[in-house]
Length: 39
Image (cartoon, rainbow, N blue to C red; front, side):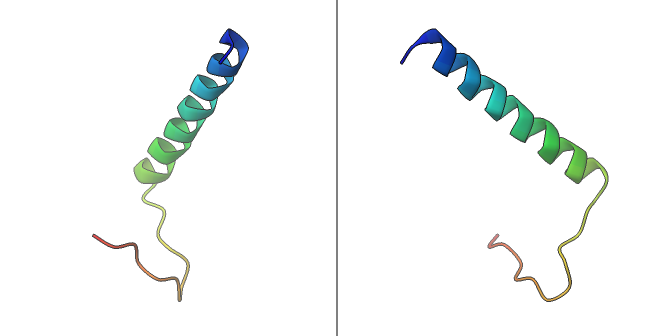
């Protein structure tokens, strides 16, 4: 894997983490009728 690919992978992982932190902080709930994730 080249350095550019590694940078892209790390950036994507960081973006996903930031979005998940924001959604958890805002306590966004599941849409009505959606199945709850397994514990």
